[in-house]
Amino acid sequence: MAGRYFDEWQVGDRIEHPIRRTVTETDNLLFSTMTHNPQPLHLDLEAAKASEFGQILVNGTFTFALMVGLSVGETTLGTLVANLGYDRLVMPRPVFIGDTMHATSEVIDLKDSQSRPTAGIVTFAHELINQRDEVVCRCTRSALLHRARP
Image 1: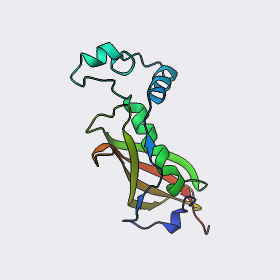
Image 2: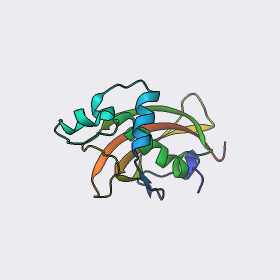
Image 3: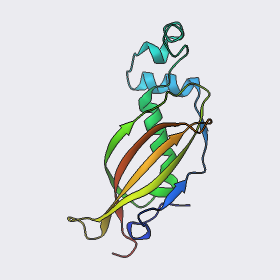
């Protein structure tokens, strides 16, 4: 399913995104090195073992990016003008290598664009959930979307 246009959304619309993704050691290693994040909790197995987690902790910015990426296909694919911002980002539980994630999205606000009559702003509440049904990341995202009918 492609993304929806602004005028196809209603407050309360909720999506369980179908793609599930298991986080790998390579995901964490590449993301951490590509973003120049030298945190030993992400890269040094011995340091991670000595921490309260006892194992490698997946880079939180990867976790956030995965959550948003899993949501795109059913929310904004092909209808996005621009993402306007992300708010209230929290990571209530850690993510570890081997965890399998899925995402949900809910429309919490709709607003006409003041500067673009052919677009509107949809605010989504996204959640990333692991295989134990624990929320590991959540945020709101404001997206400027084209209208189907300008």
